[in-house]
Length: 240
Length: 367
Image 1 (spheres, rainbow over the protein chains, first blue to last red):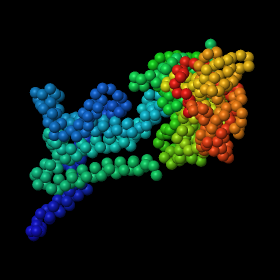
Image 2 (cartoon, rainbow over the protein chains, first blue to last red; image 1 turned 180 degrees about the vertical axis):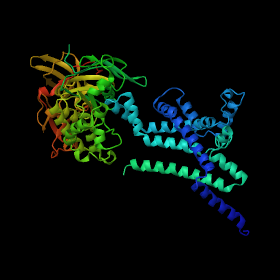
Image 3 (cartoon, rainbow over the protein chains, first blue to last red; image 1 turned 90 degrees about the vertical axis):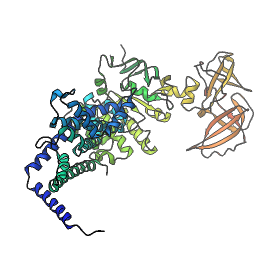
Image 4 (cartoon, rainbow over the protein chains, first blue to last red; image 1 turned 135 degrees about the vertical axis):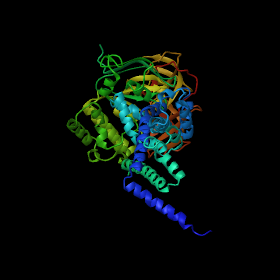
């Protein structure tokens, strides 16, 4: 083992102290990036619920030829590589591409679309699994109790609220720390498309370890908050 | 115009393209309690769920108080005037109270009225002390009581019960069945009760529909079904032993004479001379005596088995080489296999199945 490189450790240490300072002093640049990250990822994940939950529920309860093929497609989507989504979307959004006229390249909207595409199969899959866990007779029982169509959907949705919340958290978690697609369609423009992950990549490349670490800490905190929220809800409803 | 509360005319139902219920007709009068009885896979639950408007009908018509369900009356309105309880309690997350008041909530009943309406049922079904307990902390019996309370609080005009006690242990089952019978007696609620336990059916219902392979084989009051099954298959389904075949050799005012193997036996049931018939000797009217002379309906045989069945015994007596007559006996009975014995039964213990459509000449006895 070689001698301890004190310079390396002191730089790392001062980087960490700098990161804490950036966070606690409310550094405007840091907080703009945090805000943009949350805005883009929450918008994309919430938007994916709107079609994702009904599609997942439909796939779970219906039987038709090709259903397994569709499920396979959604499962493939579960492991959709972000860079591939970024690539395809970038090509579509090129000035002379099919969606070029929308002028969305390097905008937060393009990032929301990319993250929405990444969220959708996750929400569909996990919703389908949750709905399949329900006792099929529960539907009959609720109808026999006089539930209208909407009341039935509400009651059954309420029964699987935990797995549904899990589906949302999984989708949000997947996109908030995703970097490939965001970088490709967003372009890491300060104040607009720069988010935590793209900023970490950039700052690390430039040797600004304090900033990179500050963003890394926020990312970890976000993941921790998501996990804590999930655990709290699960434990609150768990049978004792 | 009929007085029937619920009427089904020639209803058929399909599952995955397969016919599981074929042309069933049924009429439920106010306060009437009908058992839908049959072996596993007979289509009992399908019939009940179809009648309850929970499964689509392939053909036929269901009407409730003279209105065609799904046409003159919406399914939702029909469901809101009836109630159903299944084998599993099918409760929602939350407390017992939350579940019991669920149907009322769905009907938009306000909180104070809900509280006032559920309380008597919580008391009646002995779950008032559990009302704030989460359903995950309930025993099977408590959960099923909650499910019954949830249905009964809705004052259903027809009550559909799909083997509600099947998953419970024997003591809980009999206690809950007795309590439910009291409630149904008191409230005079028209009830359709699916079961595969004929004793349970007889205890709770005054009418019985015997179902097999999606078809109604017999539909009558309970006592008639038990005493005079229309066919050999019905007898088999309701658990009757001692079904045999014989030829009618004489018929007159004194009764009908059957040639059964080497024996000539007399019955009060009617049949045409020369006809080959399937008949039943009712177990409970058979007596055993020490071996003696043969006479009318007094047949000698040999004990071939003496088995304990719960709190009674069942003795099998072999008559000739082919037939085996089963006779219930007290636990104290110590007749031994091999012993010579005389089987005696009165002429009215013999019942000839009126449905002659079944192919005779197959297996000689239903055991």
